[in-house]
Length: 198
View 1 (cartoon, rainbow, N blue to C red):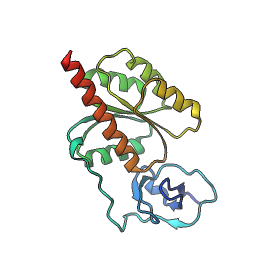
View 2 (tube, rainbow, N blue to C red):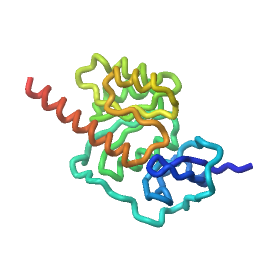
View 3 (spheres, one colour):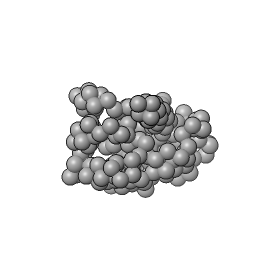
View 4 (tube, rainbow, N blue to C red):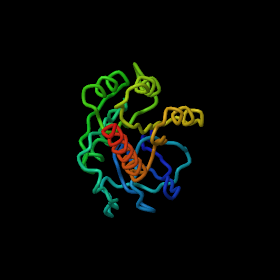
């Protein structure tokens, strides 16, 4: 039985086949070089382009000078993906704390006061939307980026009603996430500056 992971590159629409052991890890698309997470297998008819265990070309590095040393709360019940995102964000110069369900997330927001939260939609015990409801009346609540493997425009619409920074569907290019992180941290800085001015 073929246990490989088949994905579609969001950058160039290349159909990619990756070894199962790369699940939750980051690799470059062999066609366009887009940095992406190996996460799930959408179409069954993906072509045979293979991803190596190590990329042959160096990853493109965005300008992250103003993203240093911010605290990001990463909330996803998929431990492999959670760890992969943590590695990416720490490599970008951030401090990262992890939660694996919404209950842990709400506790850590109160204890650690993160600058940004990356929040999965579907999780055990408490999902992403109840966490957003919990944060709604908290004046120092962090900006939120929502991530999900689920399809459906109603999910994005509901997230936007809560004022999320971005709503990203898995799998996604790392550059898309890092761009959203920068946007969210800029929003956080503006909110803190406004509070300090009051």
